[in-house]
Image 1 (cartoon, one colour):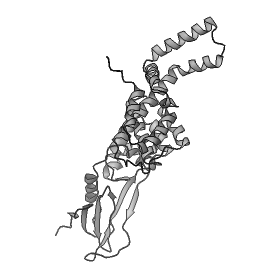
Image 2 (cartoon, one colour):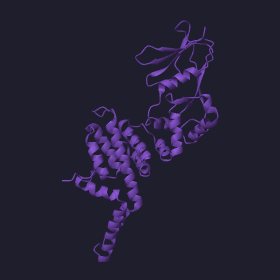
Image 3 (cartoon, helix red, strand yellow):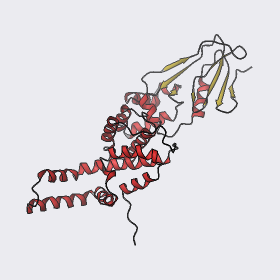
Image 4 (cartoon, helix red, strand yellow):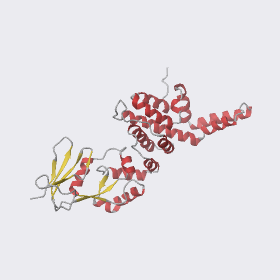
Amino acid sequence: MNEPESTPLSLITDAVSSIPEPVRKPLCIALKDLLSGLVSVPAAKLKQYAQGIEDVTAARTKITNAIVASMADEVSNDPEVMQAASEIYLPTTVRKLKNRLGVAKRAVEHVAKADVDTNGEGCAAPDDDWMNCFSRFAEDASSERLQDLFGRILAGEVLRPGAFGLATLRILSELDQTLANDFTQAWSKSVGNAVDYSHEWSKGDEFSRWKRLSEAGLMAPDTTTQYLPPFKPLINGSSLWSPTNVDGVGLLVYFQEKSSSSWKHIDFTRAGRELGSILPKPDYENNIREVALRLPKQGLTQIDFFRNGQHPEVIWKPSS
């Protein structure tokens, strides 16, 4: 006997069944909204519907023939039913539903891979306004890249309610490949919520990249400067400052009272930070070490690099 052919809907239902029930419940609510109720169709019907979605030409031919036959035979006196049937299988409708299925499949995959509490602590289905907006954008996500990104966002919103704002959904829907590459390059240099304002950002390609990302709403249009905190000598007459700290790694800067050091950086916007959260993590350790090398050193006595749970590493001291 031949094994039944997998379809997008059957793959989704199989994957959902392996997710712990407390997490599965809010995820299924979100999927039901995204797929307009298709996930509640009886299992015996899943292959039938999915096949129509997978083969647009065949679906159009079948339904068109049925409509023509019905009209010719005058077996249907309900024009609303016939109109609904024809609209369901219009190419645009089929395409949008297929895109939603692609997003749903990837959302389930990302939830299944996530390290989540089996009790579903903190998980919740997105609210109606958020899901309505998300669904409109997801149905136009025709590329695998966009479907994967929207799938990551839906998974993240279920696991961490409020993690993604509506502005992020809009920006993601408008993200072309060039801008996506720009953001990936910028995010790879992140030290958490910002990038160090090194000389490369002030001219040439990096300056142009920054301005494009700023116009898209992903990076701030201007630099920000973080200054030293009030001087309070704690160790050998020096005060302490931690300009950056992310994922348990950061810098500890020792400075004297007359120090004029500061840290200039470019912030990511909220949408930029939210979008960055679904990308691979940057090499924070290397990026933070680069910050230390470029900090103005006047009045500094030492810079340590630290990791949570380990002794700080001295990475700079003034030469004797």
